[in-house]
Image (cartoon, rainbow, N blue to C red; front, side):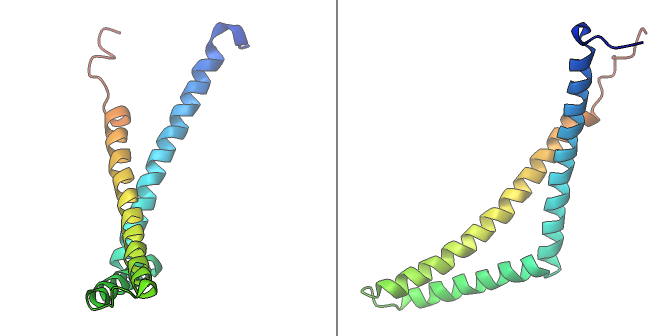
Length: 121
């Protein structure tokens, strides 16, 4: 049986493919976040980078407490170190937030089947 483009079957199948793609993206988001978390905990490259930025930020804050207020370069360097750490922290946090949202979306939209969908058929 051939499909006629005018009978609405193509949009149905395209919608199904789009839903499969959407779920795949949500699942991939969770996997990326899990890999980031594992890297941070196991002191992988990202974990080491984040740890170095954290130490730099702490050191910058320590130096900032005793810096001459007229030392614009020193102040800017210290602020830059703190901002870099916060940027890494926000990036990691953003991935974790996206993973939580993706998991909630998967559970809500894909894992919960209405109980009475198949009743009476």
